[in-house]
Length: 435
Image 1 (cartoon, rainbow, N blue to C red):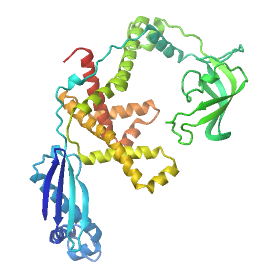
Image 2 (image 1 turned 180 degrees about the vertical axis):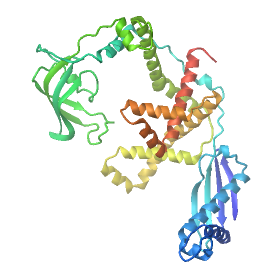
Image 3 (image 1 turned 30 degrees about the horizontal axis):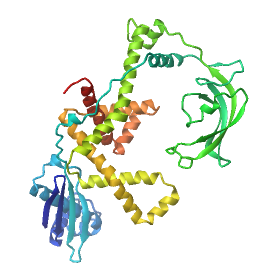
Image 4 (image 1 turned 135 degrees about the vertical axis):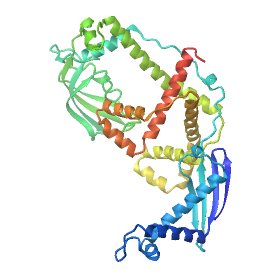
């Protein structure tokens, strides 16, 4: 078996080989001999099955096993020749060419993905400025009130006043698109909190001002990213019938209430509750500030500033993921047309290269930052995250964890947690003046 193995760059290597028919025949014979020792074939004693019978009856499997065996040997020899450490490998090699010749030789090309060498330089200098997060007294009071009203029962409003923000209403509704009712757009005796933003934008606001037994048509526009493709971005009319207005009485906020909210505190007071609520709000606002503004800015700085090779097969996978995401947003007609237009697909792939490159670079940068900052994510952290998020959505935590494991999602979740921990630590250090 003749082969050449060369580095394309620090993150990619290519192996080109011709596997001669004799090598294949020898490998097939060895595999068949080994199989004959354990296989049971009717008419023969176990371990006494002739090799020729094994080759004949299990031809397809034997040939597949032979090819896999020879490719694995080729991979091992190429790895040794290139002096590649197993810790530098990313996944299995990609077989980019596998052509059987007329003389039964096989021409093979393998692409080997290697972990990039990321020189972070003075990465902390690229951190954006971190502004201090303030929490107002109103934010604290509003949050405490939200907690307090949860256990207060709803009371029907007897006076005939109009709906205002904060009310709970019982309504019938039915949605129409171009004058025709659409599936999933109808509900009866539905309780809705005005101002909760649980319906599409513009829906709840137009109920404000309605009175008992009033019927009203409201116009709304579904968000472009709405889960139903048939409704995404379209204008619709909802016919609303208001049956009842309900409200909750003002809660009593005192030390007794604080003790109920903070049962673990022996001497809970309203002031202590406010302090803890303030910390909670600050934590949530900081996380939002980091995730929505500073993290994208920092990663963008790093991606643009750091230059290193990336594994091409990983890049191609990311390009395909972007392409598939775009296709999932298309209607059936567009998808059918796209199938017949390879030039358009190639154009879409080409357009996806910049975003895909940035995404792949960011992944390896995060990995390098984690090593530099000695940050790790344990399997227990991954399990706890999946379990908690599933429980928050009313799902079975154990079932969700098993499902994600079977679908191969856990490594991506682990990387997401790692990214969060690394960026949060760096930004916290920056805000506290640490170097």
